[in-house]
Image (tube, rainbow, N blue to C red; front, side, top):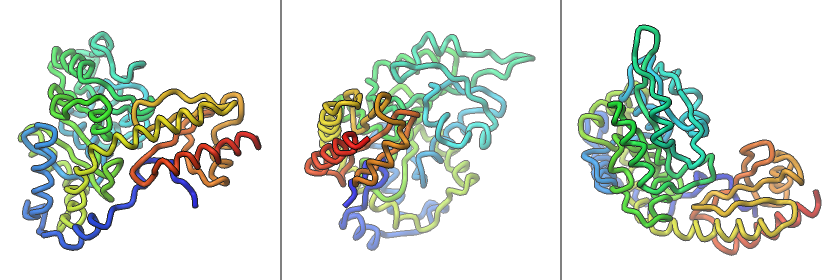
Length: 340
């Protein structure tokens, strides 16, 4: 059987989640009458210490709703050049909000105050002005980096010096919090909105949460409707999300498995594997083969990964992968490398 390490989005809902979905109390969420969605939104806001939260179908929708609420058309958004919002969301900033990105190279996964001050554009007759700063934690494309709260707060302070709102793409927020032993409310204390996913390492089949103050969420609810995310009896998919919070602490197991996977793969001649912060393992095959060839060979051997650069493959541990799977994956990849 193939070991699927392409992403933590491939997790299967537990039997308890399936039962919860089948038995969920439901109503029309567009009218605010779905009790399960309401409970989930309250629980999410409590988890991250915000006034309110909004259930959205996907993390991408949540990020793009935040951008639309925070900005005016034509403004610029300051963000890292490797940010998910910039690289992997189909130019949603331009298509959905009419704003343009101004990227910086955040080598430490979060723009420095100096970078934010330098990228800031004051509105004038000739220039649109900056409208938003976005951050990411964990940072997917930079290897699942867990960013401590201090750089997040420093970046937010720099943005606020220019009266700019700050949105945090925290799709894997709880991975960062568990890895660093930081309370989620502290991690997001100084940003104006935060998005986190229920459908990655937390194991729910559908959904993400967008959180912020009450005024922001009221505006976000309206934009969610505009973007086609107004759902009716959504408690059926929200109920597993309530159970997903029970999986927060077990994210540490995914991190341990990723560390073992990285160590095992790194010991194979021909592979270069940095030590991971969380559950994302990056494998460089510069001296062996291009990533497409490597991934195809791995899949043929029963290990599924993803191409993330010309010579970069990503493997991602999750709750459906145990330590035996990790050891098997190491052995299978070793066989692949020997055959290339």
